[in-house]
Structures are given as C-alpha cells and as structure tokens.
Amino acid sequence: MKFGGSSVANAVRIRHVAEIVKTHLNAKPVLVLSAMGDTTDHLLEAADAAYNTGKFSLDRIKKLHMGTVNTLKLPIQKEVKTLMDELASLLSGISLIRELTPRTKDYLVSFGERLSVRIAAAYMKSIGIKAEAFDAWELGFISDSNYGQAELSKESWDLIPKKIIPLIKAGTLPVVTGFIAQDAQGSITTLGRGGSDLTATMIAAACKAAEAQVWKDVDGILTADPRIVKKAGPVEAVSYEEASELAFFGAQVLHPRAMQPCMKTGTPVLVKNSYNPAAPGTRIISSLRDGSLQGKKKILPVRAITARLNITLVDIVSTRMLGQYGFLAEVFSIFSRNRISVDMVATSEVSVSLTLDASYDLGELKKELSRIASVEIKTGKAIVSIIGNVKRSSEILSRAFRTCQLVGVPVQMVSQGASKVNISFIVNDTEAAEVVKALHLDFFEH
Ligand code: ASP
Ligand code: MG
Figure 1 (cartoon, protein in one colour):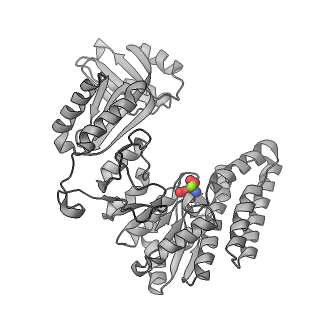
Figure 2 (cartoon, rainbow, N blue to C red):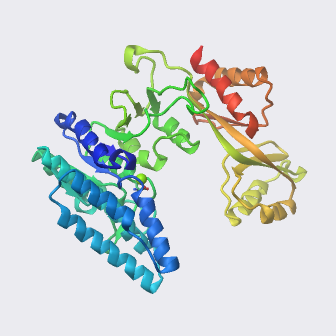
Figure 3 (cartoon, rainbow, N blue to C red):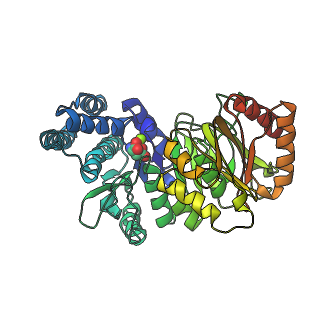
C-alpha cells in the first residue's frame, strides 16, 4: 500500500491513512510512503537557495515535521531532531562551498521520505499496530549511481523479498521510504520524481504480493479530465499498456516506469483515493476480457479520452523522400542533435508530420531541417487521444471522426500505432475541449 505526499501531508491525514491501513491488516500489507506534502519541493528549494545565495531556511520543513510529531504526541522528537540537524549541516555545507552535485541533491531530498516513515510508523505504533520504519536500502533497494533517476539493480529482485517476507511472517507492518535507494558505494540515490510508486510496485512484484495498491488523491483513472467533462467518471479497469499511454497524455495515474515491475509479473495495480476510500478505484491488469469486470459488464471500446494542449506541429515535405532510404533517419537525427523529443509521428511517401511540446526553441531545428526539406511549423495545437481497444479501431475511428464532423472541427493529423491502444489526432488548441466533450458524450454517456 503506497500513500503519496498529499495523503500523508499532516497529522490529520496520517491518522486517516492509519485508519485505512488498519482495515487491511489481515492482508499483511507493506506500507510505502512519500515525503509529507510538498516536502520534496521544499527541500529542493532550500538546496537551491543555499547553493545560489548561501542562505537557506528550514522553517517550513521543521514546522511541518515537528508540528506533526507534537500533534500526534509521538515519542520520537529526538530522532526527528537528529535528522533535522543532519539536514541543516548538509545545507550549511552546500551554502559554504557553493556546490550542489546530483549526488548531494539525492542525499538531501532523501530526508523527506526518511522523516515521513518515522513519523507515520511511530503513530501507528502508538495506536497498537506493530509497525516499523525502514529506509528502503535496509530492505534490498540497491540501484545504479545515476543520481536523480537511478535504476534498481537486478539483485533487488532477490534481496527485497529476502528482507521483507520474514518481517511479514513476524507480523510486522514495514513502513518503507518510497523514492530512494542506495548504490553499490552506499550513497543515497533517488528513483526520479514521483518514484515512490515504483518502490511500491517493485515490492509488490518482487514479493509476489496479491496486488499493489497506490493511494492517490483522485478516484483512480477517469474517463476524461473532470474540469472539461462534467460526467467524467472512474474507469474500473485498464490494461498496463492503456495505463501507460494515459500517463503520457497527462492523466493522473502511474508513471509508466512505475508499472514496469508489476507488468513483468502480472501483479495487478489498484489505484485508490485516500480521500474517498469507499470508491472502488481503478484496477490496472494484464488484459481485459468481457465479463472480467464487476457485474460481468461488457467492455466499452474506449477506456478514456484525453487532450494535451500547447503542442507544436512540424510539417516536413520533400519529394526527395519518394522511394528513398535514409531520409527519415536524417530528419530524426536533426531532432536528436537538437535534443528535442518527438511525440506523435505520421508519414506519407513525401511528407512527415510530427508533434512536439511547445516549450522548445525551434530556431536551429528549422534551419537544419530546411536544408533537406520544406518545413512548416504550426503552434497552438492539441493532441486528442482516445485510449481503448485497438481491435475495435474501425468502430472507434468512425465514431470519433463523425463526432469531429458534427462539431465542425477539422482533424489535422492522425496517428494510430499498429498494436498500440492509442488513437491520436491533432486539432487546434481552442477546439480541444469541445471535441473531448463531444467524444465523451458519444463513447460514455449514450
Ligand atoms: N517525494 C518524491 C516526489 O515528490 C517522491 C514521490 O512523491 O513519489 O517526487
Ligand atoms: Mg511527492
């Protein structure tokens, strides 16, 4: 069971998490926690301040953690203070030598999770749960030294269950730091922002748990953005592939990286809402079949509809492309040299269209592309994506385009992968909301 920052943001929320965990103790859970609230951001801000100005403040972080310890009347003031002092020394060091390496940064942000698990475990103990706090490396989380984005090592797959199963058998509730690990030299590493989800899915997969529960502050995956579509509702189940596509298109779900361990072992991941534990949440599983849903419902062709705004469309046309080889390689090597990540691609014999995030500076790119083709760059676009069962792509495409026609919105580019679960198309930014609403009406509300 993993609870994110907002689920453990203060004393009230921690009490609430304990209530939820209590009702699951029969299932012998392992608990994974993020840093409290926005602590990770606050730690990074303090580090930047120390590095840039030589001054920093730990007031916010101290107040939150000490305040929570006091409110919950936990006998761990000394332990928390020791960690705070270590953190303050580290920041002083940074402000003195004005150096902030990726390794130091990881060491620094690790304090967020190390504090939260100690506080939460102490509270659970105080209400009679046999909880114990652990830093993930004590339970087999070994990674490479790619600070900020470390990769867990293969041996972790063996080490983690070796450490955790005996604890479970002894009736302990391990409360484990998400997000962090240790490399072979014993330096602290982090698994990338939002990495606590990965900690949880890794434990679930390596220990062959019945499922990984990821508790967030939304009712699971929704059929659409509720700010756009009033009737958007939770999706009962999606496949790992569908969930990965959704994550990219900005849906509030798991990072695809976090799904990987469970994908490997076929372990289901349940996304639940800690603010609304009664809601069923969304189950992420290997594959969906008709009747596999609760109440043996028929599976709809579409799982969810999303839109990503602020997209730039690049149109590259060259007759040189006809029957040629190597042209696309040349085009993509230009993107690669300019370190620009391409999202969608569609090609014909003499043209290739692709999309990028609007945040890039495209001056150099345009110059280089213009040497081999004619290039047009169009800003203010949106990607509308329909995630669903591509075996029913003809039905999805016909309904989707009919809907676009009905609302009078021309589709400017289309892309559908061969075996993928995503049908995407480009419209103007200003038309995206209307299209998503109309599609939702057609696929979900009728
Ligand atoms: N605390 C870390 C972050 O904010 C990890 C996590 O929350 O999953 O990125
Ligand atoms: Mg967080």
